[in-house]
Image (cartoon, rainbow, N blue to C red; front, side, top):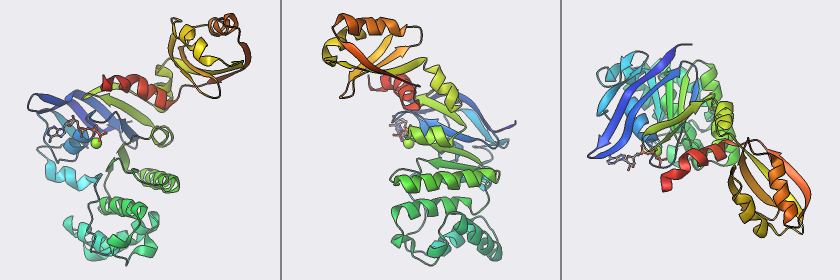
Length: 310
Ligand SMILES: Nc1ncnc2c1ncn2[C@@H]1O[C@H](COP(=O)(O)OP(=O)(O)OP(=O)(O)O)[C@@H](O)[C@H]1O
Ligand SMILES: [Mg+2]
């Protein structure tokens, strides 16, 4: 495995405020790398630096060995960027947009036509090639935004929250598109707030908070890092509110919440389940069901990023 993106001690400050703080990271060629973190964590700041839209205050970032500051022009020719806001022209047709972006890269017209054909088929936009972009649905606009970023066959595709506003079907179609682009050899860097997307689409994940890296790993590793599991206990008479306080005071219980179904408890692995069951028993509850779940990425995210609000 060889890294295609190398980030070394990268920092970005706005006045006294540190939006990125000494971030170092390698992204392997061929990866689908997910960048996660709460609002304001520094994800877009990092992406803007990698896509040459903003300069770091200190440190370096390289894409295919090219410095994003001093080799900006060359970097721009090997990356495709899908910003959060659509970058195409509403008044141009789908094909005209691709022609425009292709010509920005100096690609010959005949070649742009050939590539457009392929990209529009890939993104299921071929039927809309002659439609003005303004008349596309939201999901189609997202796909056109991606198409425009692919016209110069970039080795790295960077997407900032591409699935915002997409319905579940369109979101899954977007994942398929990203996987297909990745299968053809393009490394993907994507930010998202959807944990399901991160879990199912990405092979590597990074959670940032307040400009720093919190944890990095594949989705399974991240879930295991939480060292927590969740159990749902259903009992009769089901006076969960009364049991909750006592369960919460157990040392290894991380959090506890009541629902119609029962008492949901997040606990660290070292706590024997029996200790929890004893609390139920001593409160006069008889256990009906114990459901045990693996920690989800969402729980890990809340655990590591939750303190952002405090
Ligand atoms: N031009 C700027 N001037 C001052 N502060 C900025 C500027 N750009 C970003 N910031 C600050 O840097 C921090 C990181 O912002 P950034 O946009 O990178 O967050 P993010 O992780 O992308 O968040 P979100 O999930 O909400 O998109 C925020 O506190 C933001 O207010
Ligand atoms: Mg952002």
